Structures are given as C-alpha cells and as structure tokens.
Image (spheres, protein in one colour):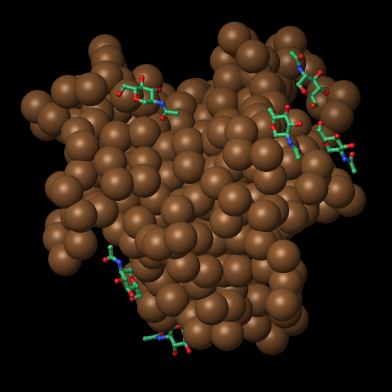
Length: 336
Ligand SMILES: *[C@@H]1O[C@H](CO)[C@@H](O)[C@H](O)[C@H]1NC(C)=O
Ligand SMILES: *[C@@H]1O[C@H](CO)[C@@H](O)[C@H](O)[C@H]1NC(C)=O
Ligand SMILES: *[C@@H]1O[C@H](CO)[C@@H](O)[C@H](O)[C@H]1NC(C)=O
Ligand SMILES: *[C@@H]1O[C@H](CO)[C@@H](O)[C@H](O)[C@H]1NC(C)=O
Ligand SMILES: *[C@@H]1O[C@H](CO)[C@@H](O)[C@H](O)[C@H]1NC(C)=O
Ligand SMILES: *[C@@H]1O[C@H](CO)[C@@H](O)[C@H](O)[C@H]1NC(C)=O
C-alpha cells in the first residue's frame, strides 16, 4: 500500500483516479496526482504532470497523447514550477475552481471563475481545451473557465486570439523563456482589439512584426493567408468579443502555431510518416511589415520572392528569402 499524504488534509470523500482507465472528466471528488493523466475522449490530448526539455521541474500541462515527441500545448503553473510533484494534487473545488496543491497543502496554481458553480466538472476536450463547466452542460458559452482563454505559447485550432469585450480579458500568446522553462518570455503575440484591429508580435514593449489591419478577407500584410486546403480562418467582431481564429479542415491533423522565443510565429504540422513536427511556415505576417527588413535603399514587394529588392542604382548587400506560402501548402499536401 502506497502512502498517500494528501489524505491528511483532504476529506475521505476524495477518490484517487485510476490511472489504468482513461477518463476525460473529473468531478469534485476526484484527484489528479503525479502519474495520473486525464485523456480527451478521442485520445488526442492528455493532461498531467511533465518536465519540459532538460528541466527537472514539474508542471501541470496538456500535451498530445498519441505522439512520441512530448509537446506541451498548455502549462498551468508556468510561473510556479514544482521541484517535486510527489504528493501534489490537482482537484476541483465545490465552487468550480481548479487548485494545484503541493505536498504541504500550499496553493501552487488555481483557475478562477466568473460565477460559483452548482455541480462542477472539469473536462479535457478533444480540441485540447480544459473546461470547467456544470455537469451535463456542453455549451462552451456557459463554461465557468477554459484553458483556451488563458493561453500559453501555443495558438491552437479553434482558439480565440482577441478580447472579451464584456470582461475586458485579452486572449494572447506569450513565448516560453526557453525550451526548458515555460515561464513567460518576452515575446507576445496579440490582437490589438481597437482602431483597425491587427495582430502584433511584440518583444517586450517593442513591435517586432505587425499583420496590418483586417481588410475583410485577411490581415492586409499577410498575403500568405489565403483560402487553402488545410485550414479556414476568420475574424469575428461583435458586441461581446473581437477575435481571430483558424479551424482545421481535417480535425485529425495535429497542427499548432507557436510564439517562439526568437519572436517567430511558427506553424507546425505533425507528420506520421516521419514521426516528427514539420515546420510548415513562419507566419511573421508579411515580411514587408517587418521593421526595416530591406534596409537602406531597399524596397520591399510582397509579391516577389525574395521580397527585398534595391532601388535603382543600388545592389544588394545581403540576400534575404521571402516565404513562399503557396508552395508550402503544396508541399504540405504531399506530406499529409
Ligand atoms: C464523481 O465521479 C465518481 C466516478 O464516476 C463518482 O463515483 C462520484 O459519485 C462522483 N461525485 C460527484 C460529486 O458527482
Ligand atoms: C523542493 O522544495 C522544497 C521547499 O522549497 C525544499 O525543501 C526541497 O529541498 C526541494 N527539493 C529539491 C529536490 O530541490
Ligand atoms: C509548498 O509550497 C510552499 C509555498 O511555495 C513552500 O513554502 C513549501 O516548501 C512547499 N512544500 C513542498 C513540500 O515543496
Ligand atoms: C481571474 O479573473 C479576473 C477577473 O475576471 C481576472 O482579472 C484575472 O486575470 C483572472 N486570473 C486568472 C489567473 O485567470
Ligand atoms: C528577449 O529574450 C531573448 C531570449 O530569451 C533575448 O535574446 C533577447 O535579448 C530578449 N529581448 C529583450 C528586448 O530583452
Ligand atoms: C484526415 O487526417 C487523417 C490523419 O492524418 C487521415 O487518416 C484522414 O484520411 C484524413 N481525412 C481526410 C478526409 O483527408
């Protein structure tokens, strides 16, 4: 019989979830401990404790369940690592708050709620969204809390990037400090939700890239954002919210957009054949929107590849390559 220290401070009503049976939902009487995982119904995503890269710290996070390369898409306690997760528990309170407690019962991380719950459960959906909701109420609009509304560095399919205009809450991505440290780095990938809405990549408070405003079809500086066989995308603006999101046409594909430490917004697709992530492209909006990309006496044309050219009478000092997005889509189609 193992020693379960949490029983010292949790009521005897609490159950230990069976790690052998995959469940996608916990209620207020079930615990998640080191070694336990919650798996989404279709088996795509898994929630549990992990250590990123070379780190020995433990984090509560969500990763892809079916692939061999550990890839976290969300981290709960990114600012408060555990140096040891034995005796750590995740549980759902009767009010509907997820709490992560260490062995001595100190609060390491918690979710929060807009209103108290009656009969809350926490479910890991097949979109990778961890949702706290009233049991039986599957309408996401009614949820009490969603991990998709507290993004880390990964912009997932069907996630919203923008602002809840009622609560004023912004949904945006921040890079990790390093592959071993998921705490907030200095790159922010955010939608500016006023004026002419556009997406900015910021390094601290400096704008690194801008998408240009939404023109009804796409962001004006993102010529690569075109109807394509892989995903659809759209911009929503109404009284309640303003956001950008994309949707995979084949939901079985694994696809992620990451705000990386160097400030690139990278798109990855999982390729079964090679059992690895393919860097599909770097969506730094239009290269011409990149500040002073072409340098002095340079002209930038998004329809050219490479995008930079010189003004008449000048010759290039460095050759830069532009992104050929449409070519990439063709490559991708061959891969998938
Ligand atoms: C939580 O789920 C377990 C397993 O399905 C069940 O035995 C228990 O009664 C449930 N508790 C509540 C409060 O619904
Ligand atoms: C983990 O942290 C606790 C409390 O800060 C400390 O007592 C313990 O030595 C640490 N363990 C390791 C392995 O660093
Ligand atoms: C639990 O967290 C508290 C607060 O961070 C810390 O003081 C304590 O040492 C931790 N306990 C263990 C066993 O890590
Ligand atoms: C909790 O909610 C408040 C108000 O809705 C918000 O300002 C705050 O950022 C939230 N905190 C977390 C950790 O989500
Ligand atoms: C942002 O972080 C990266 C790596 O973590 C570092 O190289 C860069 O200098 C930082 N930028 C600023 C403006 O501090
Ligand atoms: C969707 O993707 C899966 C996994 O790559 C593949 O097996 C399936 O054939 C695809 N479906 C369509 C309609 O392309």
